[in-house]
Image (cartoon, rainbow, N blue to C red):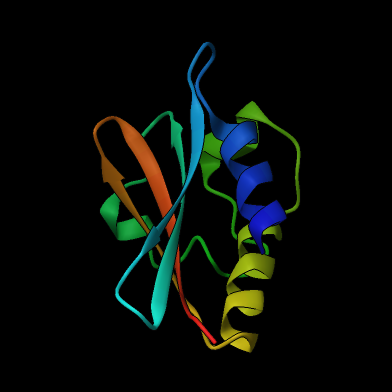
Length: 103
């Protein structure tokens, strides 16, 4: 899951842009992993579908190679670990997050 999100961040980071990984505690029982990258914003109406298998936005197809599986793999891995996954756009970055329960 982490590798798929990191690969996605690197692949879609704008030229000379940056990607970053952060881990934050959310109290005693949960943590959130952020994988952020500077790049073209993912439109709000696409944020729900980008985790589907084989989904490729038209603009993404022209920029790079791939099969549209990376985010679907990350989503399935999160589900199998009872984690939540999502994406938002903040401060010029696409911000993917995963919330996991601590053991």
